[in-house]
Length: 71
Image (cartoon, rainbow, N blue to C red):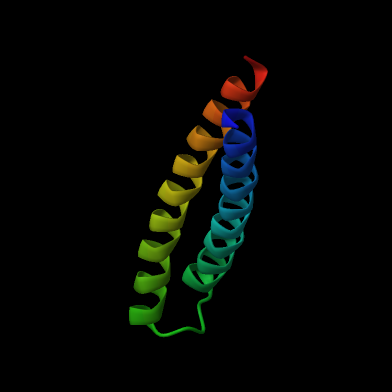
């Protein structure tokens, strides 16, 4: 039962990490866009940092799930 739960955590974290990465890349593009208003660019840069932290958190969970699955 624990292996099934760990497998679910792995799949969920992997999907959420991929979503955070896609959002981060979008926000980076907006932050670099010289045609976007400065406020939008600053907001996008802050959002990209938050997405990076989310992505890292999901990678940690994914790695711990892999470890638990291998036991």
